[in-house]
Length: 251
Image 1: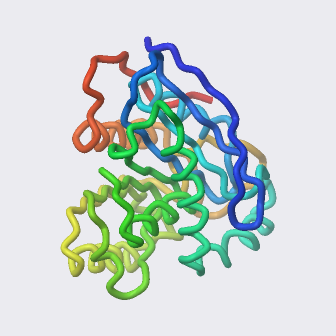
Image 2: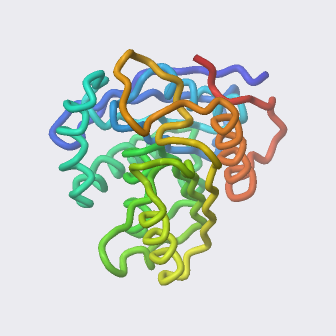
């Protein structure tokens, strides 16, 4: 298995001090890099391990922050923070660009070979980077079937992969249809995977006792979604030298 080095990185964005998690593979050479966006509650250890798992595969990986180091345990408080953010593409792009600047400034990063993946709110942020015309090799999202401002999806310059649960009430069939219509109209190279029987946030193990209707963990589909994300990266952003395989991050 590849030796991974990690460190915390602090940087300003959205009027906050963001606290990201950077994971580096062994060696000193430049590597392809992946930006990783978290769910609405914020960045926690499970999501940091996503970066570590990708570094084990040979990528430089930055799990970025969206809440200034906070993890929201109260769903109402989380929604009070994320709802206005999700309604403001320019704010989301600012958060994404700040994190992307940190990742590209890392000496181990090959700045011409960067992809972005994201979950929930973080997935919407990386989609907005694509709609802003950022040069990315791939965009992968889970539970982030949001549509952007009219016509801006035509700026997306890379393949887009999206995953969603079939029973997700937050991303219902109507929203799936709107997202696919946007991608089709823009001529994007896109794929959508619908995981049968899965709810919203099916990819994330429960971390507290607050049960939110329509939200639930689905271990089998969580494994499948992770493999699909890794497959997207292998196709669009391959690591040129062999490295150890890695499963999804564990709790």
